[in-house]
Length: 187
Image 1 (spheres, one colour):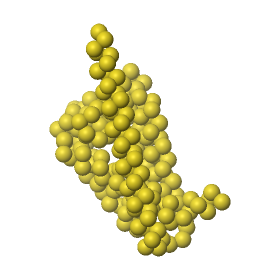
Image 2 (tube, one colour; image 1 turned 120 degrees about the vertical axis):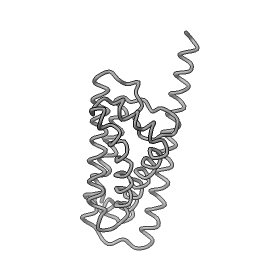
Image 3 (cartoon, helix red, strand yellow; image 1 turned 90 degrees about the vertical axis):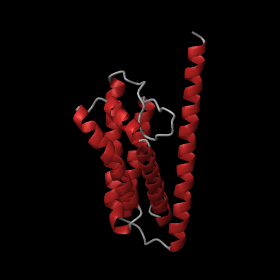
Image 4 (cartoon, helix red, strand yellow; image 1 turned 180 degrees about the vertical axis):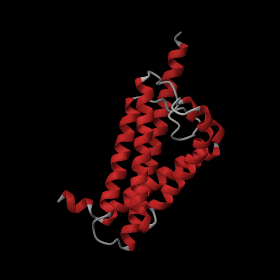
């Protein structure tokens, strides 16, 4: 029964549109603060300094291409797999820095003005997002064709999930900012 539900085009379109909106939002936020994002890439200390700026410039463009590909039929499966690969690389980069004890750095996911500190929860979040992208890629290879209603409802559901996700991220950022402010006042 679960298999039948997962193969519904509505579920697949929900996953595709959620991931597309997530990647597009991340790309646009990085492009609007490209110098700050360059600093984030450099701060991860995984690339030679000479590669940090080119990576910071190219990464948002790649994210936009993935977002567009997720919504275009023939490109959706390769875009979902590219999304999974990129999310896995991000998760690995975060894990390396957590293992180094560098949890005070910003993850660089969204340039909302609030720093998103990294930790094992961030690694786990990327693991879940990677699994969702892999799932979308696998489900795209199977199932019946989507109707216009499936597509419209899936797009609406995916955008709703994105808003909930972004709201949770912002709430987490507010809580972290409040905790940091409280800890500095007590000193």
